[in-house]
Length: 444
Image (cartoon, rainbow, N blue to C red):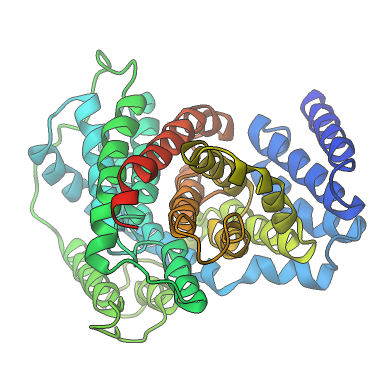
């Protein structure tokens, strides 16, 4: 009960303070979000229960009608996650994750820090060309088996989630905010970086983060036993081979489905449908890796968590709170450029902890373009910083899909993720703003 009272006190304090700056409706929304974040963090109520509260609280306070809130819990992207969860369950049931982990252990150093670096790098590189959501879903079962040490297992799960976010910015197609920026630049008539230019600009950020982030996760793990299973290696059985073919085919489809404008238009298939189809295929006769009872293992509290994130994003847009928050940054154009970039990166990184990075980017880009004016020499630099910082949110499960997915392992507490993620957030802000100031100015 004390945890709930604390959440109420924080929510009331934030809402009251915000009322001096924002409208009553916007202040109420900020108070509710603060209340939810505290409950998510201190486990005052079960994760799924807290995630369903927007359905009650938003209509109660006149923020969003009930008929507008509930569809957020059944958005089409949620079925992508369900398909991915089914694939992850099949990997565990068939034991394919054991085979994959054995091969990984042969390639990378058999130490705690070596395994953390290995999974972070694999996750980052794969997420640069495929959906970071898909990659996290596929790698999570491997992390759950690759070690028997519970402490190390948590660090590896975080390495996968954080690595997916880190690597997603490496290419223009790696994550939705990147594509939003490319589209927005075209809309306002500014020249967007080419595919190669983008990779040249973001590679230093990704490289620095892949050095720093796993190092933080490996802190204090030097003498920790790896505890990896030492089972006798066995050849793949029939179910494992079938699942491997399905995963391989899905990966190829996702790869060929990715457009690389203007050279390749992609296949035009819906990624959400592809993931769900792959998951449902596991139930079909002739494959039959899963039966309906296995679906009980889907972490539905995480599905509700996604719904809460989408509801908050919608409310930020409908109440114009995101725009109002961004306008509070108007003062930064009077600061030195390095300070402007640092403030923008810091504000965006921590704002996206409580709302969708895609939604925040869509709202923030037009506002950030007004800091100097759409055609000012520094505007593209600010917009690039905004976009990359939006993907570097590591504290809360609602911040990015990879964060939420590893929470479904039920091994990581929100408080633990928030504590570690806070320091990774700060490093991300420093790396992005420093790279923008010292390196991106050579390109833009």
